Image (cartoon, rainbow, N blue to C red; front, side):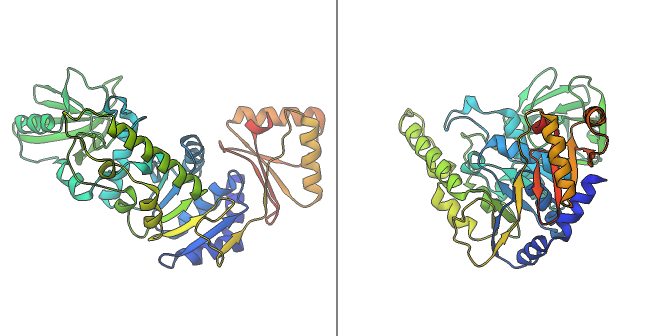
Length: 406
């Protein structure tokens, strides 16, 4: 309930109404100032609920992106929030590709291509640096199978070999498949669970997702798309920037765009250096075919509705600055007398105090501590794992997190 009350205050705020009006216009630009900690998550959540448009949030690095991803998954739902990571640690080092990240990237491309309802995509510079296969190439490299389809196991086997899937006894990770009698198990790069396809002769009888550990079925599905490793640098498909791939109506949020451009240029310089050190015996794709530089990203960002939320606007958005009067959570260092004094001071000024707790046990811990020290302290707890607390002076809301208090 407390989470809902905080959300409603942001939903009713003049700043959010101004922002909602702004994003109804194509190629609109805005600069958000004063959003601190998880207040950004509440603003993005309320805006997303009203907008019916896809959002792309670009943070400074993977760690920060992961924190806000968690916030948004808690406030919206996991199925509407997607993480788009980089797929490897060094350019041209295919053996250092992270399969889990390749899977997440393919899931995002698949979701965009499937034209399902809009989602929020959370990313960071390393991921945008890599180009992706075009929509046309992804479509061409997707094996679509539906229940009642007429196709042979031999055909599926052949296609999976063509997609460079590895045949194993039991599938455990993306890029593997197994065949046992009339059953094909396959772990696509577009889904975080493998599929079990059962055949009756040359007809697809059923398709289910299953758990790798227990081998037990999870869900029945009617149709699937099996996608190979779209990050493989040795594939010769034409590639494009991720910003070319997403829908034109996407609202892009970027924090400190100067950091984004600086990191991408740093990656690009390393890619050129790695390319120049490669053996000339094998023909490798040029860096500009596989990677983006900051000039390209900057030019493409201008084609979208863009919201900057760093301290400075890199794109000099001076005519549409939306300011929030929000300050960060103070530091208490487990000193509960200071916390209680602060909460009582907030209450006397007409502020509502909320403490976000990771669990019911943690909430009970606060109640026990306060009961021992001061029965009259005014606050409410709610179970929600938030990144960072904040004080919203316009709405007179205090939202502290348990992990920062402790």
